[in-house]
Image (cartoon, rainbow, N blue to C red):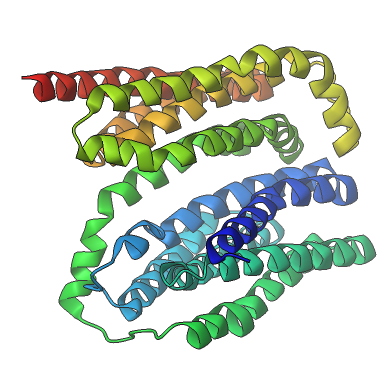
Length: 410
């Protein structure tokens, strides 16, 4: 099989299974451990997601783009270890500040550790991808997801012990890191492990703004969960987690639409074809929003019944909330298109400033709505925050792209 085709197939399979892990786990926990435990798991998994972004720093972007080998593999590995240690400290601090009991705190810390292990695996995936062995990373994600999920289900069904089930899931990930990810990287690639302190500092500085605004976005998206954690209870958290689950599909759809166009947008930028750049971005956004014409009616009539069958709990009275979540997720998906377009245009520092503004507004929105309207307030908060993101990104992108178009014409 052609290596590029092999890379595409395995990476698609692995990434898809990996992306759906959280969905499968949430369903299992809800059915086996109950809605209150599902609420704890939902909050802990979201927190671990933020910790994962912190540990990843700027991810594989700069690692793959390092074509002149200015930064060695050893530098990327060392930086990732440093960011993982920082992430672990933040995880412990989060549990202590919120004064969680031993049970809840242990679940949070186990899932945060899991996401740190995944971040360490990712740096070895980057080494493999750079040498055109992306399919090996895809194989790792595929088999790791299947084995870890199977182990989780077996242990949780037998013991009904959520902590033990998560620990087994973590253990499988550690085994794959040590005996597959690291070994495959060593066997397939000639890793340059030399270190240089000045280059390490420069590498850390390169991705600082991308890192800051992506972490801030993750925090903003999950803010309603933290206010629900403060004002409401674990069962309410579980219901909110179920209602927001369909948003994952909207965002994945948007990524499938956007990813093939990123190279085209980069070429347009390099050739200063900003009108074509704007046209492609507009078409992607229209496609995403147009999908609501089909998705919203289907969700209105079938969404709640299907979720009740999947999770095995009653969700009567949340039909409007589900629709607001879906519309809000579509707004966010469009915002994400603008976000990526602006990254191509090298506007990362500006986006960090935008996200600080959104974060401040989101705090106010969540406090007012959730303290007054409970779980429905969480839904209203999510939809409102996504609308704020959408409006701010539309405005900033238009200002930026029209200034570039005007500059290229003159």
